[in-house]
Length: 460
Image (tube, rainbow, N blue to C red; front, side):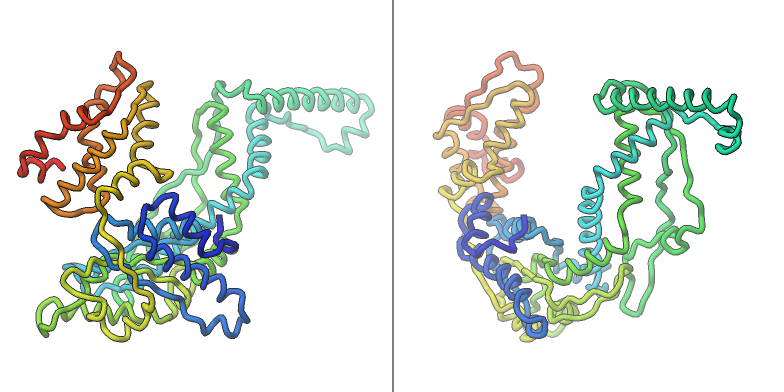
């Protein structure tokens, strides 16, 4: 669903369905997204001058920074890329071309648009696939004489026409059986294109090594004929394989590429995680030199520049950058001034406590409690979570976060997985198909781990 017609309030309501709390951060991203729509609806000349309202999210791990950005992109159907800014300072990455993130998001956009286009031509591809499969099931009879010669021969005309009529009737009967799924279990031999990954090469340029993932096939085009191979599969699978092949043929890749580049330029979202890790200290030596260098490398992309990709030139002027970091030993004002100016919106996210954990377990559409109930239902097991159990799980997660590393809501995953490990393992063989999770059950499974702090460090 596109956010084009959603107000900031409606965007926040959509985010509330998956993310608990963090109202300030939701408001900030909702405004940034709406501003993008506003820019696209002003005059073209002025729209080019309006810079995106980039955001810095400040908060510890596990409080929802990445999830807010990811859900925002999904809501807007925007190409989305998450990348750790710190990786550009690591050994082996220092001096690496930071423009690779633009190439990566373009690849994501190309795949997105390609899938959309294949979906648009699916019905047409299915029709063609049916005809190809009918040709396999009932090969057309060879006609040895030209039609005019046959028609001139009065003795031959009627038998040929009658024979053709019989073939057409049989084909229509087969079509009905095919459409109604009566032939699904029958095996057929089909010829399909053989997909082989070509040898990969890296392109060296003045800016470093570009992971362009080019294969010899992309370089030489269609000089080499595509190899075919025979496969023996069931009719149902054959129909799907041929339909997929035909859908790819029907898609106009030039149009896909053009649309993908436009989508990146107008609605791409890049999530720069760990932005605080590229903030240098006051020392003029050591790794901090490269950290400031990474900031300066990022600056042209955030300011707006042209990046060369294998699909063409991409402008980053209106790509939305959302940066995030804990900033526990630094602050956003430690970034180089030019980069600070390109992130006008700053929002602090709250740490999560027991009450937040209780809501996270129960309320979102993808709530953890709901996930486990549905997963175990596939095994025929009914799991019932008592309210007291949910509170106890939240309490355990809070205690462990305080004692060890605070990883926010991610702690709930480790607690839930440890608590339900026995049920998950024995589910297919269990005779008792109903499991009630109450406070006693939670304590029984987790008390010994919580009491032993060393053990909790390793297990939870």
